[in-house]
Length: 159
Image (cartoon, rainbow, N blue to C red):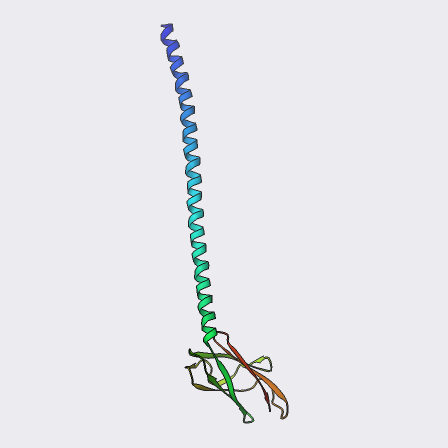
């Protein structure tokens, strides 16, 4: 009987030791699973980050290439006592639209016509607006025209 009890104790001791060994294996597997999961998450985050930064670079490059192909020049300026009228020539290869006009570094806010109108290559457009400052004969004024892509053309006009 004693031999059976001793062998049962040895079996229990071995079983407990085996449990510890299996706990270490399970712990190692869980640690490996956690590290693998973290690696997958980090990989997918980096793929998303780099693809979005590549898309942003592509959009910016397309905008810059369009801006390079835009060509505009102010050909005529006149003032009738109430409205300012400027004529702009598109001598570039692509169409553009007037976004803003600055008169002596002040943004024009009251356009009558011409703003946002598509101007094709080799076309003229007349932009009419109320000047944001009063016009005095003999003074020189700077007029800057800006397209939607950001291309600019400036002229100094003497009233």
